[in-house]
Length: 311
Image (tube, rainbow, N blue to C red; front, side, top):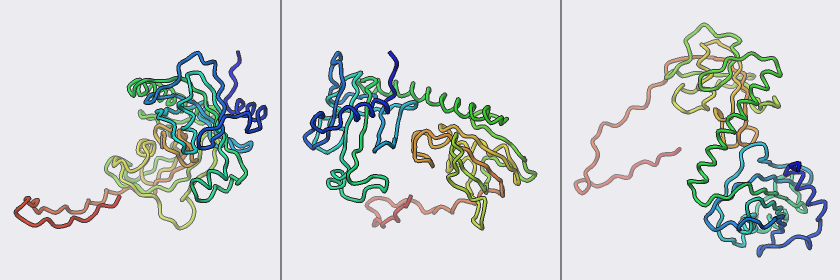
């Protein structure tokens, strides 16, 4: 049987079932429909469900996990909170489900303004496909590690496919950044402990859409200390191919960028492109001097309030 993409499944359900009477309703008023053969047991409280999901409003897909990392959710008792979490305790392995949230109800219950692309009379639909259920955190973690390994390979394949398609010859570093050196530069080398000043233009891969640049205008270049962990790994890794005055391009798989965190394109697992120019390479600035006073002894001297540390 041919597998139906989840976003197509959502559309089929909505087109075939457009009235609220054809859906069930949770205590809070969430509309939902579950498609199940009921062959597997219902998930238990504390267990983890592994799902792919698609979120849509009207004909626009807001987010889809298909083709990428699944999502793991620990199931709790259903509470009337006007959330898809109310439906999770009803699911079984292999089930598909559609949850419908009304935009005006979301606004009334939680306050605040709706995003500009969502209207008060819109229906937000979320479709889930339950891929598996894991009874323990250890089982879930082991499966997640397998999925992360597969995701890493997907990212590598996407970057390499982009380079091949565009006839780009790049050098792959040991850590996995793909670097094109247009000009190495002739000044001090980028290396651990050095402060680097970089001008750059960032783009999403494979779309090539620019999301940020400091190449033009009077703005200062971005400065950071190599090896200090203050920048994404792909920069810390790839820029070591350059010296002061160098120019080139970095092609960075998501695992060396923002990984599972939403990146510049507001999605997790984003591969990125950076055109870079090394404006300067200098010794790192000295750290502020630390107080050499001995610690106070409890009960012998009054405790002075310590300044709060801001992150």
